[in-house]
Image 1 (cartoon, rainbow, N blue to C red):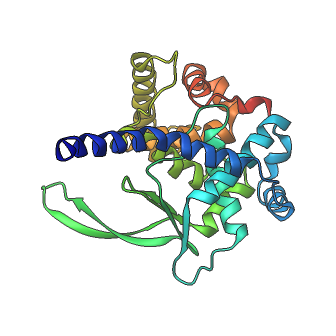
Image 2 (image 1 turned 180 degrees about the horizontal axis):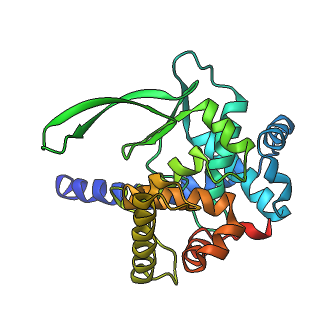
Length: 273
């Protein structure tokens, strides 16, 4: 009888362990969130993120708690001589966690490691000539999001993005928007939407605005959005996320329907910060 029941007991134990894992993970996160936020960490936020003081008190508290969990769960690795410090961790985490406020989050579940370079890093990319032949080009990047657990960031650009909160450019927000987009597979400009949001409505509005930006980029017409967002839908979502948090007033006036989609998705309205 025992040899027959043993596989059943093992299966029950495995299923029980899998079911208990999310509860255990959330229990540990609650413990981390309940810890006092270090004074030196708060000083770093105030120094590196000038708009933190403008945020409502409840969002400030949420952001600090998210930062605590984020730092506890993610691995930071310095590259090309970068020594990882609390300043680097807090500056990056604070910007990344802006995207998690006011909504249920699993803290970028695919992301395990953040590689930090001192400045823009060089990468070889394969591109196609008009005749279809392939060639390799070296490009300098300030950030990159991979769908297998890593983000690469330039520390210089991460600092710059935080210190200039109204220019519409923020590499940390950009790359972590990609992470949200990648939670349901390859980044395609359609992240997992919350309850009450329509994928059809999202697709129609984003497609229309994406096409408009492509036309503006081709004609050289000024836009609140960086032309880089016209390269593909995934980049468009990341670019408009940057502008949403950094130029909310202009965004809402010029593109109200798109802005409404993002307020519903991110569950915040930066206009009121």
